[in-house]
Length: 589
Image 1 (cartoon, one colour):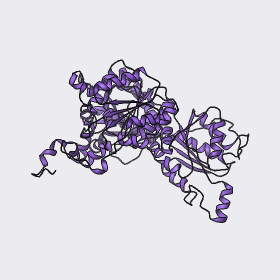
Image 2: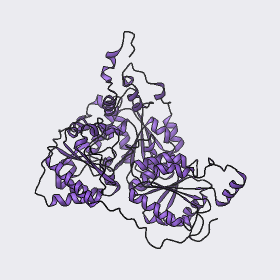
Image 3: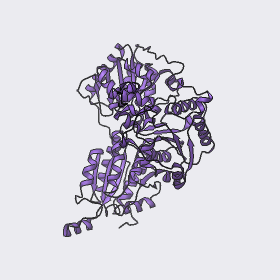
Image 4: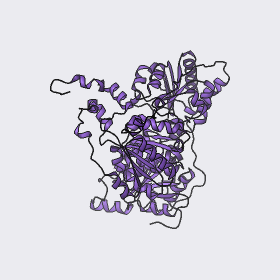
């Protein structure tokens, strides 16, 4: 039972507030009521109720991207096992999120021992949740002793903050409300010392590789943002004068509108889904210094063809070339040492990337009346978005949030995103993430958020609209509505995207009445089916800056986003333009 004295829940909340956390996303449950009651009384951290545990997890992860840490409180079993997908994504993409829950109390466990009763939301193995979360956290703990709880909490939080990954804290139901001592000093987080010999070797190999290369490039990854190293990296780029790219996950890790970016940024590299100019340039580089990059299978071409030219430096170590010898080092220390070396070096780089006048999506002007009034496509949607970014419009101040959809790969081709204004789960790739994540982003960041989702992802997390409305968020959710899982289909059979093509039944989605859905959730609704409509929609958003919107964008079913077409064709070897040439006399593919 809770008391008026300092409790274990108060201890955790005090530590979280100390780290700058102001919101905890939650779905209630009886086991975790002691923690929720303490949260309601705690000054400085607000509870944000969500509709689903997965949505709350996505929100906490989105919040952590801007505040450095997030937290989600859910019911034991049914809640924890629902939220785990979001936590796995946070683990992969290095977002420290604290999962808070509670399991049967000490008295309940005596009843279980005496009677063999299966308590609600449990499997009968009362350590199962802890074991499951061990795979997607850096600390998975059960708090059964109030006296030991502060020590365990501190150690787990230190791991989360140091390694930028989630932790799982499950207390027996009675423990959150049990008394304990308040923290006497701030949480101490110590960095692991780098191996100085290995650090020196890595530095020498990097310098040699860069100085001997004809066309070196620097590739920036998301760990740069997680560690707050953006200013250091900008100093390094300015000093080296070497072109740079980013991974999709790290797009906008530094501003794409700055002087250094205008000069050196070659576009975001997303393998074959990249802008053609970007892909061609990066593929010809004979030295790639990847700083904090999480390499997924989107980068197989680079890893395969340029592996010997690649230096990968991450938070927890480095790999040089095709070597399997892991170098224990610190990304932050390495960047500092690289800057120090070249400040004292007489070696200069004069590598240029000759940008065409109409670089990337700028090459798709939308000026003709026929262009403005015909049905909108992925290509024309993002060409318009690029034009709005280029002009002095409010759009350049908005956050852009993408999930696993065709739009993610098209948005990666945009040029001119401000620092930290591009959000995606490009490494984990979970459908629905973008809409759920937008709640946390909106409550952690003052800029308006634009969400661009596909039908499939939005249908998984549409109820977040209700929570956005409840919390007075002004997020605008665009749904690119073609009623299919387009990415899935492109890898199954790209010929479906031809006039006579047929989609696999499992890639077809139901038709929804989006206007009725918007009314049910209490958000404003717009429908877009042409570029002219899209301009009208953005004008409305610019004028009405306080309300959340659901905006349906009517996309033809067979409209295949160019970035997805290039990617799918490179993976499958199947060419859409050749589909009609491979039919027999009966019309079969």
